[in-house]
Length: 121
Image (cartoon, rainbow, N blue to C red; front, top):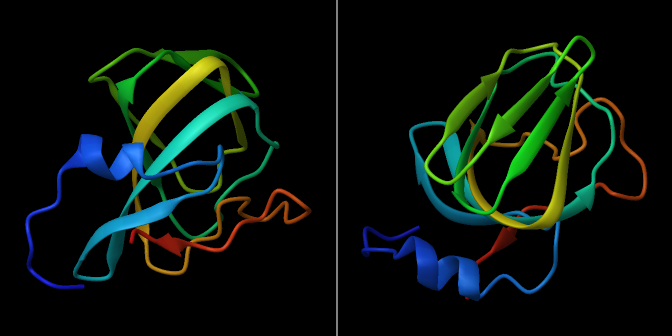
């Protein structure tokens, strides 16, 4: 990754598919990812790391086993490590994720929704 300036909205406009994270940049051992979300994902956890969601547009519900967390544009929420969660977006959501490099989008659940981290072109 170079030290070029990246525009979040331009990066999100380059993302065509839902649930396919793309690296916006990296800092230390973390990736900053842009992603478009729509529909319900899979229940999963990340046993080794917290996961930060920052909603750029839309309304995201992060389902937890004991409650739902509703995120609107400019809202931030951190899912603590090991906490099972399932993101859900009725309409399209554009978001930024902060995760350690190598974090798999489906965490410990695996399955056909697992997507490799893609690079923005």
